[in-house]
Amino acid sequence: MNTEIIKIILAFLVLINPFGALTLFLDSTRGYSMNNRRKVARVACLTIFITISFFTIVGETLLKALGISIGSFQLAGGILVFLIALNMMNGEGNPVKPDQENFDVDHLHGAPPTMAAAVVPIAIPMMIGPGGISTVIIYSSQVSGILQVSAILIAGLFISLFCYLALMAAGRISRLLGDTGLNIMSRIMGMLLAAVAIEIIVNGLRTLFPDLV
Image (cartoon, rainbow, N blue to C red):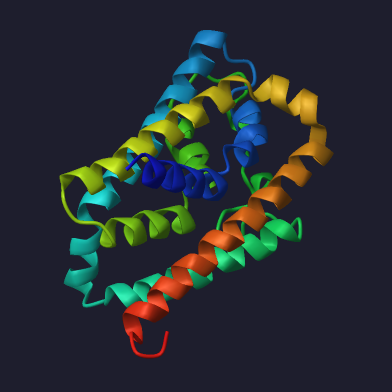
């Protein structure tokens, strides 16, 4: 159980990659007091945990309602995650997450602190987007029983807490690593994510073609 939780935590970590949202978080909360910045980080990370929990519980039911087999979704999700990994390794970021430069945060400066930016765009889609949601559904479709479902929820809780700590230390991390350091970290995350994607694809092929793989 412990090994499974660690495996899921690492998969969530490399896919959600909170370090990729640090610049947006700093821009969105520029001029905020430390207390309000802490609230934004708390709401964003709570949104991540709620999203993971929701799709963990209803993910497989949603697939059945849409008539999508688990194997097909695993294969499609694995390909999506692999494409994300390739872009991250090439330094192009996550193709299914919008570019931070496309977000206009100037309207937030000088305005009363708001928690809306914590949900969109910081939590969704910058931190957990289509790739993260697909991975949650894939993992949830492979488990059965309360203990195994709890493992995913516990992993979601840990990654949410880690994201909170990363956001609260955003200024120090950005100064310490700089653009070059964050870019290198993104490429390393991409390599790890590629390994996760291959495993998902292989599991999908095994489900679809049990006699061939």
